[in-house]
Image (cartoon, rainbow, N blue to C red):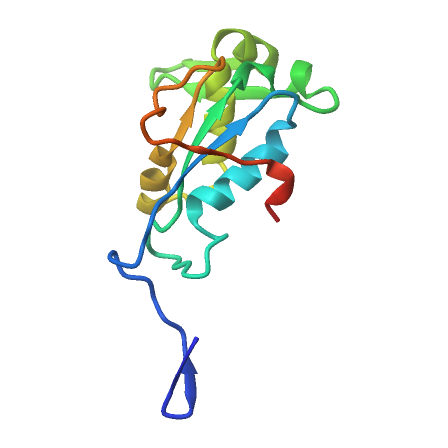
Length: 153
């Protein structure tokens, strides 16, 4: 907040003020929902002092070991992911245990995308997430910093 004529006004971040960083998160043994909420916070930029709700001021996140995430309770057997093909009777249902075997990256992407705004900004911000199953990732050149999710509040 900036003091202007004995009033406090909120400053809004400009494109020149935004600096993006790269973070690396190891999803080995981490609960999916708790991890997704913290990733969404980083991608959105809410952990920064110059957070502006209508701009992409967040950071980029690389998630590795997506196949080793945990789901609490009976979610592995009971959680359903529903999609529709667009044709009559085209409702497709996949259980979480099937998705974690075939496409573990999609679980992470769907969980994080569900915690972002449902508008143009949310679709833009969701491209700042890079999830991989396994230890290897394609963002080595960006030198992402390994962070511990417990440090993020």
